Image (cartoon, rainbow, N blue to C red; front, side, top):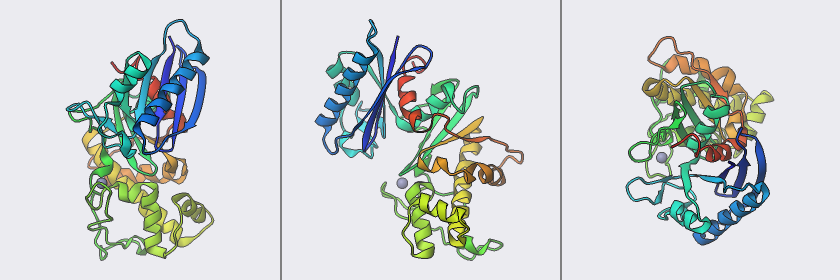
Length: 315
Ligand SMILES: [Zn+2]
């Protein structure tokens, strides 16, 4: 039986059909309609129909969908989606009605964790924590091949907890480039201040560099400058690595995963894998932490692959 995965993003919708062994049968990417729930529903249904036709299997393919939000177990409606036009809708039931077969819906970071646990950078690991470092900061937990969703479908949402051990500007023994008052921290769209997302996401890193230098660059531009030897850019990356380590230390203290996998745009920054493990160990309670930190093996395709895997693995 073929499995269809859909990754419903804010700017694009990606569809993928996998065969029995996880081999790719068909793939297509289309622009995502914005601010229009009905058009989004129609676009996803149309993409599924196209994949069905490409696969041409006698039995209908299963369908899993990853979204940048979650289905509330309480109401059955989408919540916490930054594609806000999805919020408040029964997307799974509406899609099921549109295509005539059941649909499974999951948070996109959970899909990343599931994909990487199944046949990616977390294969063979019992407990996998996957973090998306992109325009936002999501997270997902998979244990023994199953997504831990939680009572409120909120498990793994580490991005909206506060930055641990925030530094006052006069903290002793710190390098000059680290001297920024981290309290109360930048305003977050969730209504609070100082959420991890405001520090470790792409915009979080970019804004930190801007506060220090007055230059408005993207995170990847800051990384490129740093690679060329620019001191302020290197200092911004150093602060970013340390904040990420502090955030992940909370994950290790609570969950102690066998592997931490990074996805999203910032996961392409090679220095993270060189410097983050040691910095992480320094912040953890356990004195012997050696958690491997790896980039998502399936890269940008991990979300859509995880959505396809929602059927055989996640019951
Ligand atoms: Zn927040």
